[in-house]
Picture 1 (tube, rainbow, N blue to C red):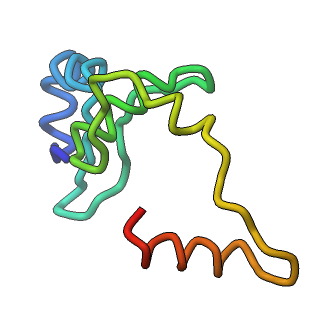
Picture 2 (picture 1 turned 180 degrees about the vertical axis):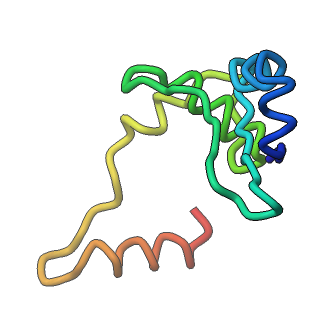
Length: 97
């Protein structure tokens, strides 16, 4: 995250706004103390912008292939009466499936 002093912000506000438009957050410092943060506005439906920001921060990696829908539609392991789904999952992992 970039930082800028109040003086730098006053003298170069347009450049800071351009960086914010590009998705960067900027912390404004007053005598070395953080006092404000300039961030891009992210609307509720702007998941693409959110994902790009998280990717730039190194928190997520956006996939480049389509998800394996067939694997998601496959029925889960059978659960015996009196058993729990957690036990079935542990057994499945132990069997290497």
